[in-house]
Image (cartoon, rainbow, N blue to C red; front, side, top):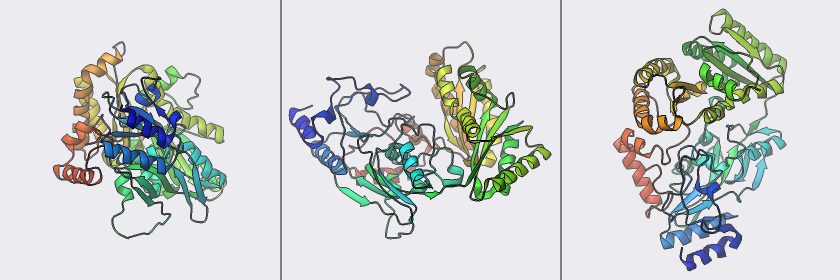
Length: 470
């Protein structure tokens, strides 16, 4: 790094907030949490305001220095760490973590991009309102990160992805201009909706510095249950029944195969499993605007009908908030249990819900034939068609060796089946570096042409998160 560039960056954000790899260990920034991607930055720069972000971007644009933006560094596709060249500024937004305001009458909240998702939820709760976006990394991921990747989570069924919850953005462009689009309006048809360009763009089109998000009235009652199903088709039929009975009050519908819960039992034996030994377990949640008695009667009536129709073999309803949290903790512990078991080949796929049983049957069989003994850990958000369809090495086989040898072939087999059934190979994790080549292979040429035209228009020098997505 030239002394003049270093001094200019220090002049913008302060000496203490320009961190160089030759001076200290920056692995917390330069390595993803899965330890799959390792890079080396030119420097980690930690601005505290939008004006500072704009000044950094103007300097980078003038000198032709690439910039990788990072929030909580919890991504799964290698999109928020620098490459190994040592030529990229890593722009960490963790200091930009302020709540700018809550408007209860408008049901909106405005916060900076570095605010941790869990703190956004708490700020809404303090106003007796609900911010519904919830995912396993919510204690460390940031608002800007979930918007840049259009994160989903466990309540997409009712509230949608991050995109659906966003009303306005503040963005710094590649050349350091500030777009002030923090509207709290739900209707604003005044030209192209620019926020939709930046949401899900993974830092390749601009730097999201703040956002205005939708809030909702807090539900008066919340009911949670586990239900055992003999087949995935039964789970899909249970979803239809639950939607008929509960309509929009159904806020969660997660599915877990037997092996996924067996891994949780193996690595976290202290976690209670009310149901065990079933091919599939469904986690359902209902959030009701009425009272708890009404919600319980509705919930129990639906589960009784499911038992009568043979859709479920057993069920356990949470009697209190502690039991509800314990049920969700089982679901959220599956990725952690997989990590304890060893490296695995992860898939974040989406399909029409109606096609999921057929896809799983066919793809399971094809994987079993091609990779004998490999173990399928299948879980995810069945309510919105998103599965985490992961492959664990056979018992006794080195997980790292299995991944290194077979990952590409496994991916091609799975993604071919996904494509055949009208699905997507990336549901909520994004593209990053991990799936960039897959996108080039599977996205239509017209779509790729349009995406590249947008990239060229907004970042003509190609300095924003180069090598990711496109």
